[in-house]
Length: 99
Image (tube, rainbow, N blue to C red; front, side, top):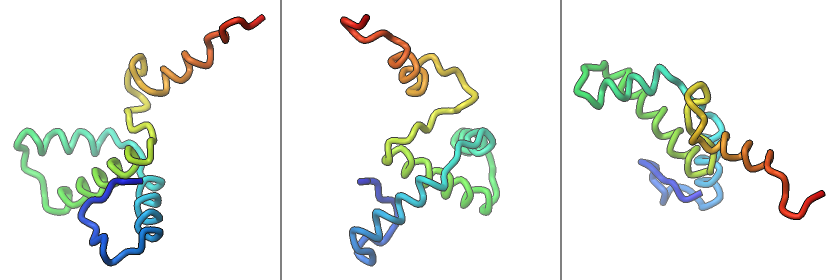
C-alpha cells in the first residue's frame, strides 16, 4: 500500500508501516452516519472536537481501505455504477466463444 497520512513514517520499518496501514484498512467499515457528519462539517456545520477526531479516524481508515483497493462505496446505495455491480455484471456475461 502506498497511502500514508500523519504517521511518522521514519519511526516505522517499511514492513511495520505496511502492517499498520493494512490493519487500518481492515478495520474500516462504511458508516452512513460518519459520512453524513463529514458532509455536515464540510458545509460549515459546528461539530465537537471529539466528533471531529472520530471523523478523522474514519477518513484515515477510508483512505487506507481505498489504497488497499477495497470498495469504499455505500453498500446500501445505488450500485449501478459501483465496483461491486460491475464485478457482478462481468461474471454474469458469457465468455467469448463459450458453449
